[in-house]
Image 1 (tube, one colour):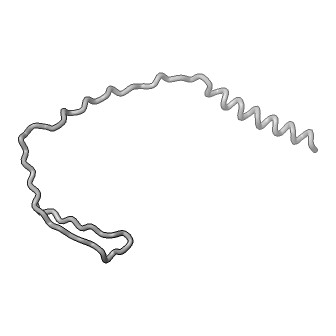
Image 2 (image 1 turned 180 degrees about the horizontal axis):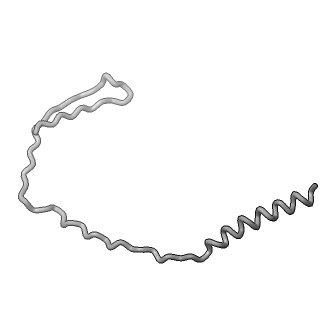
Length: 73
């Protein structure tokens, strides 16, 4: 396989150099690294606590804002 590499200066686009070379890869049929073990998928524990408190606090803020407006007018 023939590879060509071109390097270019970012400040001066006309200043560049190229070189070509032959690349040969010899395989000995031995993997350099063993295959990575797959981590088991963790299922997070389902938690239902706190979700209704968020809705409740939004409703409460709306009611407090409406009550405050009523007092100002």
